[in-house]
Amino acid sequence: MTQPPPEVVERIRHKKAQYTRLADTKQWDKFDTIFVDNATFHFVDIDGKAIFPPDAAAGADSPHTWVSRDAWAAFFDKGLADFQVIHQVGPGEFDMVQEDEVRAVFSVLYHSGPKGYGAGDKHETGGGHYREKWVRKEGDWFCTDLWMQRLYHRVT
Image (cartoon, rainbow, N blue to C red; front, side, top):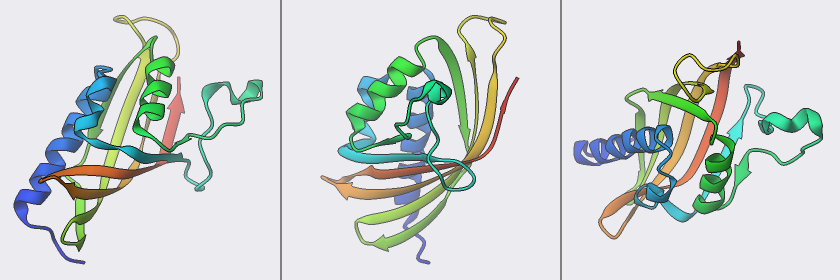
């Protein structure tokens, strides 16, 4: 494992912090500063199988996998429209695979619930790890692949 230069680590950490803030505040149109257009997104459970949308019991069979930034953002824009969320990520682990490629792992904790202070009766909390590939493009760093494995999830 090769540690990237400190300025590379800090740039990627900064973008990961932006990711959580933009997701929490539903600013989906600003994700072009973090992800390439054709970024891939995979959300899996502790067993490595795809996490299914909340209406899986109703027969939905599309896994939480997307092959573009816009498709991923559109899914969460609609899916989280009536919810408020907050994410917290750890400082990360970094491995410089090539001069223009870094692999990163971030721990994550998240909470979600219906919009409004004290609203509703369904609240979720969970956590896991993001495994990501970042590449240098035009002098900046962008995520090309995000793989999130959920290790803990509770609905109350």
